[in-house]
Image 1 (spheres, rainbow, N blue to C red):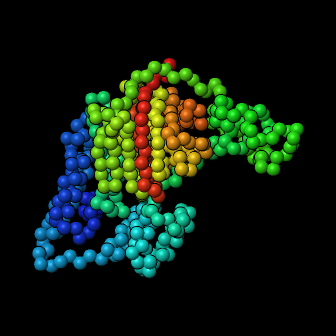
Image 2: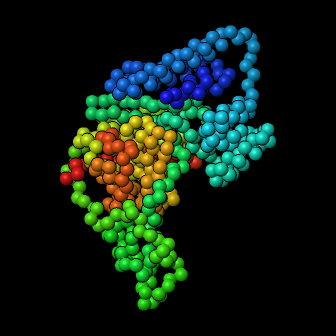
Image 3: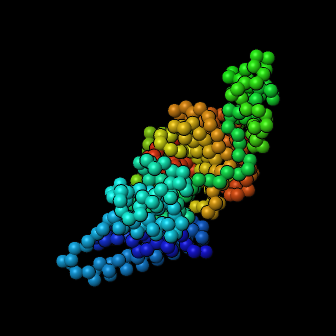
Length: 425
């Protein structure tokens, strides 16, 4: 299996642009080597240690190559940079590697500088048609990567990597991930606005019987046998994953409660375009537009079967919980977007990202998210209402969980508080 960074050249592995000064090269090298130094992975798995060692060797090689290249240049000869050509070449590299969303973001940056540069406009039109992205979008879209990433040096191109904190009670990671549109499974739930007045007093698409057993907007059959806005029963089948009243179970005792204060065991750190911090009883994750997912994770003290609860406030795109963290490319995310009134649950397994559930729901300024994990079943709740129950064997149950912010076309800030882990019974 090839490493995710093998296609990167010496500049890209360090996260700098061609023509960078020696001071910039050295600074980038020190930053990158600190992220993958073997000492940081002393408590990691064997696979993670081997990956870090291989990446550290590649970083050292890139630094030596660039240092020799810079020393061979005449000091009096200024480096002539063609920024537009660099961006165009960078976009071509992304296209050749299959990173089409990243290529689109780079081409948009080039178009803002020079709208008539070569075939930039034609390439943008082709990519926007492919992904149905608005041509007037002001922000770059999310890049496509094979592993978690973090933006460096203010570049559209991002380096692939992950940074782990190992502490006594668990492991934590801040990372950025692939955010390609997930593929929907055949059992995706129906949005909760498709009841039929002739089916039953409780519409099958309402996520919880405690919300509205008989929707007030639906007229009774005696007053309007065929409401013009209500779909027929044949167009609104009952989703297989729709929750029933019996799926709402009582929570058990609190086993762990996060302290997001000065002595928090959650990390406080930052990179170029993102930051994570714990302060005043809240945990905040911030990411600039186009960065992707930035998250931190820990390990549950009671194993994979548990109930996770947290209050979340999201400004921008998406934010929420990361579940079943099996590794950098295997996990489940449960996120909300208050601006659009949407929730989404998807899983990543290697290069594949699959949509497990999504829907529309009224979200308050601060929303209570919870996930009940038992075996291969995941019960998702928003403000104590079950919105979906999903079952999946991939990724398998794992005791690690996390908090995340997903920044796509908008800069995103996700703030979390009152995080607890409960036993199931």
